[in-house]
Amino acid sequence: MNSPIGLSEGCRDALHHLRETREINTVILRFADTPGVLVVEVEGNLTHEELVAALPAGQARLVVHELSFATPEGARRREQLLVLWMPADAGAQEEEAYTAGYNALKEYLPDVHVHLTARRAGQLEYRRLVALAG
Image (cartoon, rainbow, N blue to C red):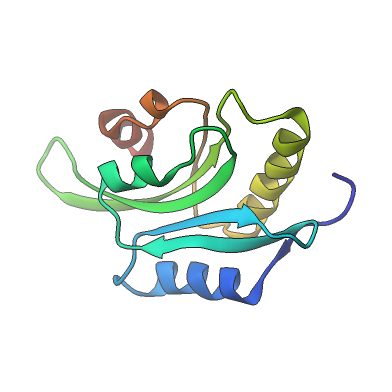
């Protein structure tokens, strides 16, 4: 994808809402019909199981998710994750576009430090995400 990635106004609003309030913990993004523009597909307060279920089996998506967990010492923590969902059925052109979107979101969200690519649901297992968030 040679064109720059854009975030729709709704996308920017949803990401701001996620970062600034406790009302939602997940924003799932997809590319709009307009080439190179990311739009919100899901904005909500999802459980881990709901998050995994919301990801389409054969299509790529970008996810910003606030993971809540307890440290081994018992302290409650929250860590935001940026996930590139790239299942095996996604095509090469889709992978190129979503990878560009993933890189654009890394720049747009510099305070998100946990980045991962998942190609199957097992890679989003809760304990694995907690280990990555640390």
